[in-house]
Image (cartoon, rainbow, N blue to C red; front, side):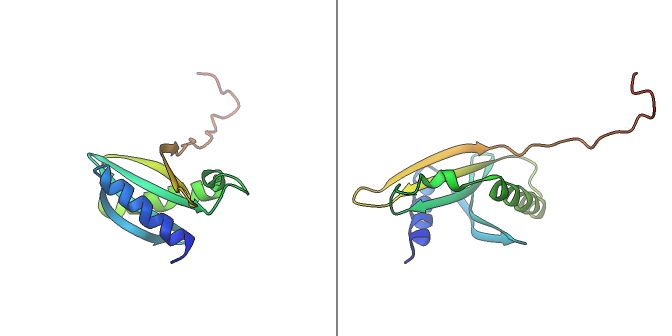
Length: 128
């Protein structure tokens, strides 16, 4: 079992112990993969799991950057569309450090999708 697979299993067990229902694991859309898609009450959580054997090269959650966030947001949009989900959703990160005493930290709402309205052209006079 790889480090990543072991971490994803630990994360899934953690979520189940907290009352989550697992909807999908390793769900793919395009170039994106959702490690875990779960639901707690009326909220769908898209969960990225990052696992490391030590913190020698940094904490696992530090490796979730803008590119990964963008891919997750795009894939989540497709997942929500396919489910016809109209409720709440969020993006979580679960960071795991393995070793003699494994440590798991769950960050609900680890990042937020930002919506930017397109620029509008009001002609020469932008005032109302």
